[in-house]
Image (cartoon, rainbow, N blue to C red; front, side, top):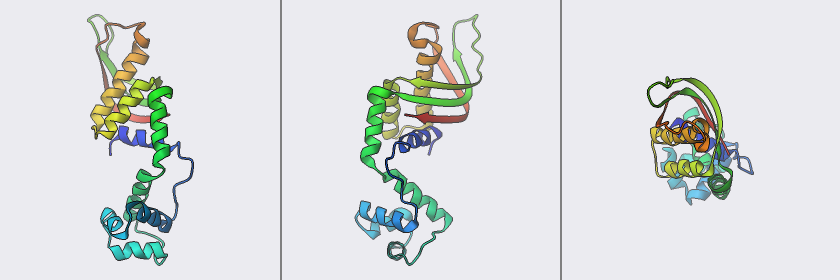
Length: 185
């Protein structure tokens, strides 16, 4: 998964009201309930149906590290869908989203200005329309580059142009060499 996509998922997961099941048995039982059967879970996790049944019964307690990671990821992906939807909707309509990034950021501007890209650490609150665009693009399967472009446009409008009050001739933001990116709702 992409850096930006993972960052958006983590931001939404911070709004969970109950903790995700910890034990492999509880996680497996949750997936069996969600997917309505052990066969679907077995196909999803690339294990045998009998293995899934043994986890559900408590005969196996500790999964291999690769299976544990897949199991955790699949449970997190499905955990509290209403809470997840409510957090996304609130960010996209009223609250907006905060981006914290350390990256090489520059811009295209008229001749005679200093437009060299340089390493910057920015924490900027983006308005709801950018949160909506980011979440919509993520749901439609956008690439990391496309999500990065939406975030760059938000940084241009909010940070560099200050909502149209300055740098009106700024054309494009170059957002490269991302060292760190984190979102918060």
